[in-house]
Length: 79
Image (cartoon, one colour):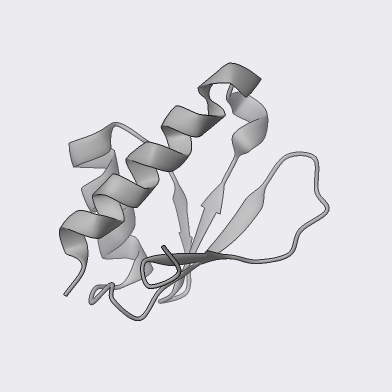
């Protein structure tokens, strides 16, 4: 859902950068803390609007669950 999050182009083999969508009414740091507490997913906040995902630390078969949890956490914060 692009209203929640927008993946930015990346070519790194380790990290993805995600921009918070317009429906998310909190800072990236607040979103990071919420997702950690409610979805048990650790992310890094960058500035007010970006989250960094270290997908290199996640098994390939677990990536869909990671995306699901990040989206669920942001959905809980959407206005």
